[in-house]
Image (cartoon, rainbow, N blue to C red):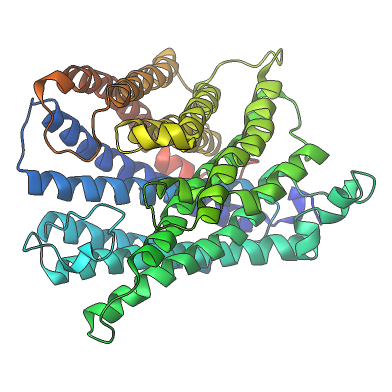
Length: 492
C-alpha cells in the first residue's frame, strides 16, 4: 500500500491542515524569537544596551524558543509530505501541538516574568542556585516547559513510528533493511520514499532523545522537591547535551525531508531511495546520537572513550548528510530546467546553509581547534548557519509551497526577490558571527568591548534585510492562509 491515491481525500485534508497549523505557528514563533535575537545583537553592538540579567533571560528564551519553533515547523512539514501516503492520527498530532505550545508558554513566563537566565543548557546545579538572580519557581517553570515540549515531541515520534511501520508492514521494511542488506537486490519495489525513511529514523532517535532528556530533567524535579540532594554534575551534563544537541540535529533532518519530497515537484525528477540513500539514512540512527561529546572536550574528567566517540561521531555524521542531502539536492537541480521560484530558492539556500554550517561544525569538533574556538562566537555561527539558512529555509520553502498549492495563489517578482534577500541577509549575519569567532570573541557575553563591536554592528544591518524578506513572505502566506485552509488536498 504505497500509492497516495489510497489515502482518502478527507484524510489528506486533515494532514494538510495539521501541517499548516504547525508550520504557521512555528514560523510565527521564529519571527518573535528572531526579534529577541536582534535585541541581543543590538546590545552587544552597543546600539541598545540592556541590563545583563535581562540579556541572559532574553538569550535563554531565544535559544530554547528558536529550537522549539524550528522543530514545530519541521514537524508540520513532515506531516504534510507524509499525509498523502501514510495514515497519521490527527488527534495525536493536535495533542502534540497543544502540549508544545503550553510548554513554550511556560518558558516565556519563566524568562520574561521570572528572569530565568541559565541558557538552554540549564547546567546543574545552576537552575536552583542562581544567587538570587531568579527564583526557584522560575527555574521550575522553565524546566517544566522544556519537559512539555519534549513530551510533545515524544508523542509525535511515537505516532510517526506507528504510522510508518504500519504502512510498510514492519520496522525492517520501514527502514528498507531487506533492500539494504541485499545490496539492492531484494525488496526494491517496496522501498519507502526518502521522506518516509527519514520519518522512521527521526522517530526512533526522537524516542531515545526524549528519554535522555528525562534522565536529566526528572532528577531536577526531585531535587526541587527535596527528595534527593543532588546528582553527579558530569553525568547530568552528558545527558543534557545528548538530549539538546540531538534534538536540534533531528530538526535539520525533518526539514531536509521536505526537500526530498518537494523539490522533485519542480525539477520533474524522482528522488529515489537508492541503496546509498538507504544506507546513509540508516547510519543516521546511530551517528546522530554520537557527536554531542564535542561540547564536553573541556571537561577533563570526561572518560577518554567518550571524547573519542564524540570526535568520530562529529566527523561521521557529516557523511550521510553530504551524500544524501547535499549531493542529492544538487543532482536534482543540475540541468533540470526548473524555474527559480520561492520554494526552490529557499531550498537552494537551505542546501548552502547546511553545507557551510556543517563545515563550521566539523571544524569546531576537531579537538585542537575546539580547545581554542569552542567558547567563542564560532559556535553560534555554525548553528545559526544550519538553522537560519538550513532548517528554517527548508521549512519556510515548504510552507510557501503548500499554501500556494492549496490556495491556488501565485508568486511575484517581489516574492522571489524577498527569498533571495533572505539568503543574502542571513549569509551576511552568520559571516559576521564567524568573523567574531575568528577574533576569539567569547560567546554568551552580554557586553562586548569596542574592539569586538564592528562585526556586531554590521550583522544588525543584515538581520534587518532578512527580517524584511521574511515579513514579506510571511505576509503573503498570511493573506492566502484562509484560502489554503479551505483549499483542496494536493500532492506534496
